[in-house]
Length: 375
Image 1 (cartoon, one colour):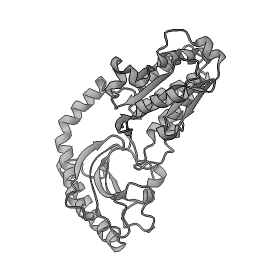
Image 2 (tube, one colour):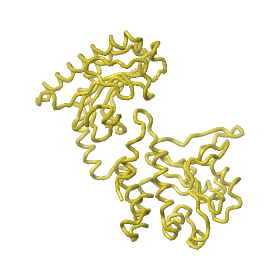
Image 3 (tube, rainbow, N blue to C red):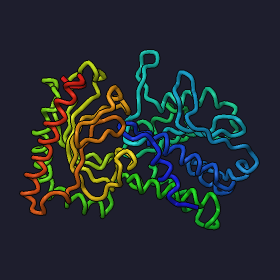
Image 4 (cartoon, rainbow, N blue to C red):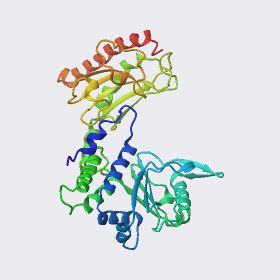
């Protein structure tokens, strides 16, 4: 079985500013759990429920359903729900870098997990197994009351388990280690772990390699940010921006860039409030906004870029044209150039890149202005 299965399928997602990673990772986990043999499944579910007894006989004899994006009425939509003999048993909420949402209930603010506990109490009363809540995260700390022993009553004394995607994947891989290599569950387990590594989600905190890489980045950050800042000074005139808006330089691991961007003022053909100027350095091996088909070629090595974008795909379809030197992936306006096209000398290269951005900006602004896309 292809160990890159989940990576390959995730590549088909819509890219720009539409990041379905939480839902997709949940679907990957659900598919992997569904594939597990009964004994392995029982061991995993015992881990989630913190059960103090062997549940393998019950799991083997009962009907297990693994459901995703379960509709829970006014309580919301839990990411995953495991039912035992048709009754809600284990409820999962999964996060990747997003905070737990809150809502008001009878004048009291309660967060998502406590609301789901209320739902599980109401709808799982006929379940023969000890009910549980599981919170799986990456870069999202659990609410303090979720892990505090003193808060048991807030969760109706249900078992509460907080884990990370990487820990869960390693647990499943360990449980399936004795299966034949070509067993479907073993293949999905490997694919799930491989997918998390590809998304830099195997560990919630930096390992030794990450810390060494961070040291290298910090040592070079000043000169890199200076380059992006100089590029921004040339790109800023592409569109008028609000007086209170400011740009910032940041590394964006989701898209593999170090960039500067700023939202533009609305214009007759760009009134969504989500149009923006952006320029920076793009490392396509880390991640890519667009498929290579949209770019017209595979990108290898660092590239510089500048353009005008919108948070929604295909927003600028009112015009099919492109100014000279620009591509139109997802209807945006993008100019890119490999760093290898510029001088090898750092200072000469920096000057050439800044001039390149200035030239592209000088072409792009009148084009957008004429079509009332910028003001």
